[in-house]
Length: 168
Image (cartoon, rainbow, N blue to C red):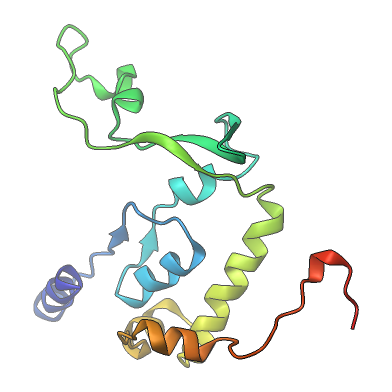
């Protein structure tokens, strides 16, 4: 948010608008909306997309659940490619900035992307925003307690299990 403030001050002084990218950490769809609400103009979504069938990484079973292999662009696995070497005769940098890990498998992209887009649109609508610049202006982030989250959801009821065939 400090970067957004500096960008906006620079725009006021010069008339030059510099778009901001939220780079890294987008895992769940609500992270996209949070990044946009805080002032990002666009987001990097490698980890988000890596969860789906369409990503080239392997789907494996670990501890009883399916996961996908994932490595960040700053990981040694990704940086091992020639594109990261300005001079092929030199060694790559000695430090790693990304992870080589597993992320929860999420199935086909087509089954998930429409839901993600709907959630973003819904949040924008709730803020009274039609465009991303409007979202920048109108969104308000509010810190809430765990009690508020619990009280805001279903509580003091026994939820039906839709997967066990209950129809009543």
